[in-house]
Length: 219
Image (cartoon, rainbow, N blue to C red):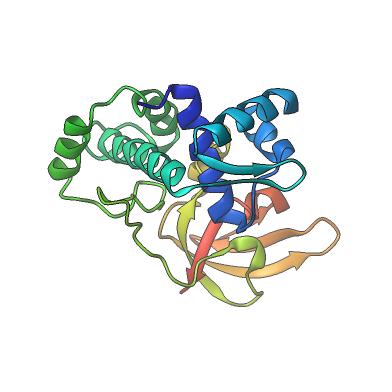
């Protein structure tokens, strides 16, 4: 059984690889996990020895098939817990992430399968992230782009909201930027790369960083 620290490493490597399509650098992983580059390098060597990642200095790291299997299992547990906490217990979208971060490491497989059955086998969590199936298969979303890459004048449906920041989740909820809402991109301000969007009849200005946390498809 993988330890908690190893599970966290593998999960972040998987997510970063899928998001950017390249190997994950030591500095990027250190930033995401909020630990030193030296600690990342030491762990990377251990993970490579265990056959969980392919790692070369200055070339970053990618998961092996064995490492990806563990990562997908952790992600499955996390996203099913988020869905259960939100749909069944009524926790807010800004609350479920932190709670699920703890529960994902302490849940036996039979409990996760019972939660999956109870929820009628959901494909996506409350933030729009796909939930890996028991066999590791990942539900597909087509045509998804960061809002940052959207085109002025077009309408888009929000399909994923990055849940890594509780403060940002609270802000999005407050201004009406929520999952599956349709918004219209009105203007991009080149001097700071912020966007002006129309949501729920109101004009809202979103910073460059915020537009990287929202993922959309054309409406």
